[in-house]
Length: 113
Ligand SMILES: O=C(O)c1cc2cc(O)c(O)cc2[nH]1
Image 1 (tube, rainbow, N blue to C red):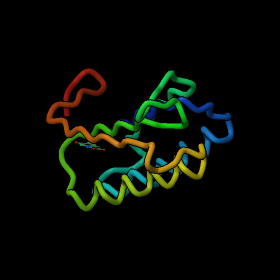
Image 2 (tube, rainbow, N blue to C red):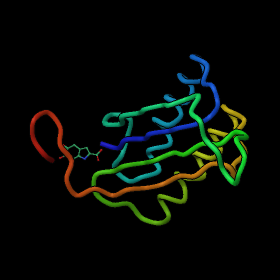
Image 3 (cartoon, rainbow, N blue to C red):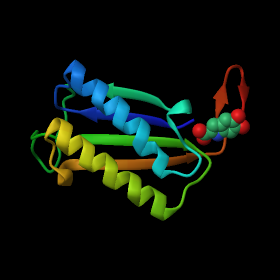
């Protein structure tokens, strides 16, 4: 049950949002055992964001997972996320942060996994 929460100061057109949704559903498979089946997404476009003193295109992508993944898996996912946000939203890869959180407790449907 991963959760990807992406904030950006760029607009996201409806067709781009669909593409991001589809591609992130594939990218999450970089993490062993994760898939679109349990993936929740949240896009927050048009945010007021500054990085390194400028409001040039930037993104903050937070990935929450239940359990753990390896450094290699995280590196592969960061590569995919940066490639995707660059190709779809024209955000330079050096203006994209990707942050990971591993969670031991995750609730769903009235109970915890
Ligand atoms: O996506 C995951 O991290 C995930 C899905 C899933 C389903 C399930 O029934 C479990 O017991 C664990 C679990 N993790």
